[in-house]
Length: 197
Image (cartoon, rainbow, N blue to C red):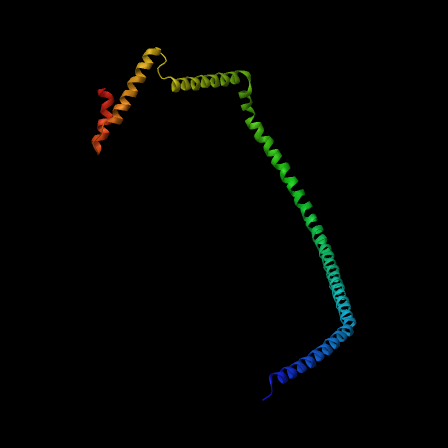
Protein backbone atom coordinates (compact mmCIF):
# COMPACT_ATOMS: atom_id res chain seq x y z
CA UNK A 1 0.00 0.00 0.00
CA UNK A 2 1.28 3.46 -0.96
CA UNK A 3 2.25 5.86 1.74
CA UNK A 4 0.36 9.04 2.41
CA UNK A 5 3.18 11.12 0.92
CA UNK A 6 3.09 9.16 -2.32
CA UNK A 7 -0.65 9.51 -2.49
CA UNK A 8 -0.43 13.26 -1.94
CA UNK A 9 2.28 13.54 -4.60
CA UNK A 10 0.16 11.51 -7.06
CA UNK A 11 -2.93 13.60 -6.30
CA UNK A 12 -1.00 16.88 -6.68
CA UNK A 13 0.40 15.74 -10.02
CA UNK A 14 -3.06 14.80 -11.28
CA UNK A 15 -4.42 18.18 -10.13
CA UNK A 16 -1.60 20.03 -11.95
CA UNK A 17 -2.32 18.07 -15.15
CA UNK A 18 -6.02 18.74 -14.78
CA UNK A 19 -5.35 22.46 -14.20
CA UNK A 20 -3.15 22.64 -17.31
CA UNK A 21 -5.80 20.85 -19.35
CA UNK A 22 -8.50 23.21 -18.04
CA UNK A 23 -6.32 26.24 -18.88
CA UNK A 24 -5.81 24.90 -22.41
CA UNK A 25 -9.55 24.32 -22.81
CA UNK A 26 -10.27 27.84 -21.52
CA UNK A 27 -7.85 29.34 -24.03
CA UNK A 28 -9.39 27.27 -26.81
CA UNK A 29 -12.85 28.35 -25.69
CA UNK A 30 -11.87 32.04 -25.75
CA UNK A 31 -10.34 31.62 -29.22
CA UNK A 32 -13.52 29.92 -30.43
CA UNK A 33 -15.65 32.76 -29.00
CA UNK A 34 -13.46 35.33 -30.78
CA UNK A 35 -13.95 33.45 -34.05
CA UNK A 36 -17.70 33.11 -33.47
CA UNK A 37 -18.32 36.80 -32.71
CA UNK A 38 -18.21 37.94 -36.37
CA UNK A 39 -20.54 35.09 -37.32
CA UNK A 40 -22.96 36.01 -34.51
CA UNK A 41 -22.87 39.68 -35.58
CA UNK A 42 -23.53 38.65 -39.18
CA UNK A 43 -26.45 36.43 -38.10
CA UNK A 44 -27.87 39.27 -36.02
CA UNK A 45 -27.56 41.69 -38.95
CA UNK A 46 -29.17 39.09 -41.26
CA UNK A 47 -32.07 38.62 -38.85
CA UNK A 48 -32.58 42.37 -38.62
CA UNK A 49 -32.58 42.57 -42.42
CA UNK A 50 -35.06 39.68 -42.65
CA UNK A 51 -37.35 41.38 -40.10
CA UNK A 52 -37.20 44.65 -42.03
CA UNK A 53 -37.99 42.85 -45.28
CA UNK A 54 -40.92 41.08 -43.63
CA UNK A 55 -42.25 44.42 -42.37
CA UNK A 56 -41.85 45.97 -45.81
CA UNK A 57 -43.65 42.99 -47.33
CA UNK A 58 -46.52 43.31 -44.81
CA UNK A 59 -46.81 47.05 -45.53
CA UNK A 60 -46.88 46.39 -49.29
CA UNK A 61 -49.56 43.73 -48.84
CA UNK A 62 -51.58 46.14 -46.67
CA UNK A 63 -51.20 48.88 -49.29
CA UNK A 64 -52.32 46.50 -52.05
CA UNK A 65 -55.31 45.43 -49.96
CA UNK A 66 -56.21 49.08 -49.22
CA UNK A 67 -56.02 50.01 -52.91
CA UNK A 68 -58.15 46.99 -53.82
CA UNK A 69 -60.76 47.96 -51.21
CA UNK A 70 -60.77 51.54 -52.48
CA UNK A 71 -61.32 50.35 -56.02
CA UNK A 72 -64.20 48.17 -54.85
CA UNK A 73 -65.71 51.10 -52.94
CA UNK A 74 -65.41 53.32 -56.01
CA UNK A 75 -67.23 50.72 -58.08
CA UNK A 76 -69.89 50.38 -55.37
CA UNK A 77 -70.24 54.17 -55.17
CA UNK A 78 -70.70 54.36 -58.92
CA UNK A 79 -73.45 51.77 -58.77
CA UNK A 80 -75.01 53.59 -55.78
CA UNK A 81 -74.97 56.88 -57.73
CA UNK A 82 -76.73 55.25 -60.63
CA UNK A 83 -79.35 53.82 -58.26
CA UNK A 84 -79.66 57.24 -56.58
CA UNK A 85 -80.35 58.88 -59.93
CA UNK A 86 -83.18 56.44 -60.55
CA UNK A 87 -84.47 57.02 -56.99
CA UNK A 88 -84.32 60.81 -57.40
CA UNK A 89 -86.25 60.56 -60.65
CA UNK A 90 -88.93 58.53 -58.87
CA UNK A 91 -88.89 61.04 -55.95
CA UNK A 92 -89.47 63.93 -58.35
CA UNK A 93 -92.45 62.11 -59.80
CA UNK A 94 -93.76 61.39 -56.28
CA UNK A 95 -93.31 65.02 -55.19
CA UNK A 96 -95.16 66.20 -58.26
CA UNK A 97 -98.07 63.93 -57.36
CA UNK A 98 -97.92 65.06 -53.72
CA UNK A 99 -97.98 68.70 -54.85
CA UNK A 100 -101.14 67.98 -56.80
CA UNK A 101 -102.65 66.23 -53.78
CA UNK A 102 -101.69 69.15 -51.51
CA UNK A 103 -103.38 71.62 -53.81
CA UNK A 104 -106.55 69.54 -53.63
CA UNK A 105 -106.19 69.36 -49.82
CA UNK A 106 -105.68 73.14 -49.68
CA UNK A 107 -108.88 73.69 -51.59
CA UNK A 108 -110.68 71.36 -49.15
CA UNK A 109 -109.15 73.26 -46.19
CA UNK A 110 -110.34 76.56 -47.61
CA UNK A 111 -113.83 75.13 -47.94
CA UNK A 112 -113.68 73.91 -44.33
CA UNK A 113 -112.43 77.31 -43.19
CA UNK A 114 -115.41 78.95 -44.70
CA UNK A 115 -117.60 76.56 -42.69
CA UNK A 116 -115.95 77.49 -39.36
CA UNK A 117 -115.67 81.20 -40.12
CA UNK A 118 -118.84 81.78 -38.08
CA UNK A 119 -116.91 80.91 -34.91
CA UNK A 120 -114.81 84.04 -35.35
CA UNK A 121 -117.49 85.93 -33.45
CA UNK A 122 -116.14 84.29 -30.27
CA UNK A 123 -113.00 86.38 -30.67
CA UNK A 124 -114.92 89.65 -30.47
CA UNK A 125 -114.78 91.89 -27.40
CA UNK A 126 -118.08 90.91 -25.76
CA UNK A 127 -117.47 87.10 -25.62
CA UNK A 128 -113.90 87.81 -24.52
CA UNK A 129 -115.18 90.00 -21.70
CA UNK A 130 -117.54 87.22 -20.53
CA UNK A 131 -114.67 84.73 -20.61
CA UNK A 132 -112.40 87.09 -18.65
CA UNK A 133 -115.09 87.61 -16.00
CA UNK A 134 -115.58 83.83 -15.65
CA UNK A 135 -111.82 83.36 -15.21
CA UNK A 136 -111.73 86.05 -12.51
CA UNK A 137 -114.64 84.40 -10.69
CA UNK A 138 -112.77 81.06 -10.78
CA UNK A 139 -109.65 82.72 -9.36
CA UNK A 140 -111.80 84.20 -6.55
CA UNK A 141 -113.29 80.75 -5.80
CA UNK A 142 -109.80 79.18 -5.69
CA UNK A 143 -108.53 81.92 -3.35
CA UNK A 144 -111.56 81.36 -1.07
CA UNK A 145 -110.91 77.60 -0.99
CA UNK A 146 -107.27 78.24 -0.06
CA UNK A 147 -108.33 80.57 2.75
CA UNK A 148 -110.78 77.95 4.05
CA UNK A 149 -107.98 75.36 3.98
CA UNK A 150 -105.77 77.69 6.05
CA UNK A 151 -108.53 78.92 8.43
CA UNK A 152 -111.86 77.09 8.43
CA UNK A 153 -113.42 79.40 11.06
CA UNK A 154 -112.59 82.98 10.10
CA UNK A 155 -115.57 84.37 12.06
CA UNK A 156 -114.29 83.11 15.43
CA UNK A 157 -112.12 85.32 17.61
CA UNK A 158 -108.53 84.43 18.37
CA UNK A 159 -109.43 83.25 21.89
CA UNK A 160 -112.23 81.04 20.56
CA UNK A 161 -109.92 79.45 18.00
CA UNK A 162 -107.32 78.75 20.72
CA UNK A 163 -110.04 77.18 22.87
CA UNK A 164 -111.05 74.82 20.00
CA UNK A 165 -107.39 73.90 19.34
CA UNK A 166 -106.83 73.08 23.02
CA UNK A 167 -109.99 70.94 23.03
CA UNK A 168 -108.81 69.03 19.95
CA UNK A 169 -105.36 68.42 21.47
CA UNK A 170 -106.89 67.13 24.71
CA UNK A 171 -109.20 64.80 22.74
CA UNK A 172 -106.25 63.42 20.78
CA UNK A 173 -104.12 62.83 23.90
CA UNK A 174 -107.11 61.16 25.60
CA UNK A 175 -107.57 58.80 22.67
CA UNK A 176 -103.87 57.89 22.61
CA UNK A 177 -103.67 57.23 26.37
CA UNK A 178 -106.77 54.99 26.48
CA UNK A 179 -106.45 51.30 25.83
CA UNK A 180 -109.15 50.51 23.32
CA UNK A 181 -110.58 46.96 23.06
CA UNK A 182 -109.71 44.87 20.03
CA UNK A 183 -112.08 44.36 17.07
CA UNK A 184 -114.99 46.49 15.92
CA UNK A 185 -115.60 47.94 19.41
CA UNK A 186 -112.39 50.00 19.16
CA UNK A 187 -113.65 51.72 16.05
CA UNK A 188 -117.03 52.39 17.62
CA UNK A 189 -115.42 53.88 20.75
CA UNK A 190 -113.13 56.07 18.63
CA UNK A 191 -116.14 57.38 16.75
CA UNK A 192 -118.20 58.01 19.87
CA UNK A 193 -115.54 59.68 22.05
CA UNK A 194 -115.37 63.05 20.23
CA UNK A 195 -119.16 63.33 20.39
CA UNK A 196 -119.23 62.53 24.10
CA UNK A 197 -116.43 64.94 24.88
